[in-house]
Length: 163
Image (cartoon, rainbow, N blue to C red; front, side, top):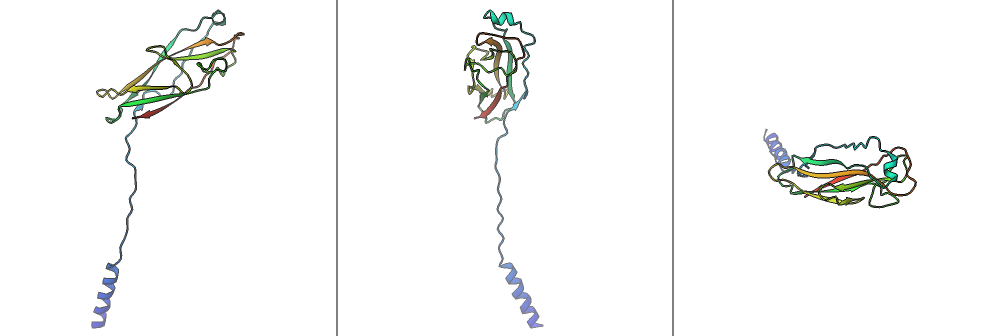
């Protein structure tokens, strides 16, 4: 019986001497602002080619990219625009449709500053409403001789970085 108690105490002390390591990993981040609309469709409808040949442009179509529900710690957001520049004029975006020598003219709506591929726009997040807005405007513009009828298609992508 003494031998059995001795073995039990020895075994118990042996198992109590083991150590266990627990490593816990993770990342704590702030959620980004919500984008009110993730897909924009700017429709110029039918444009008369005669107007573009006479060095007129289409009317501006106004639209805004709006951010909402921004975290309290987010003070500003930087929007970077990416698209293919028009080969005739790098200040505009290319038409991937069948109409020739027509491009997309994109501007900041407040001051009509031209936005081209790689442009960065900053917006201050309203600390009360937790919102921000990028007011933009777009129109079609003639970029060379030989304007032809056809379709107009242009694709832009926006990337947001929050600070």
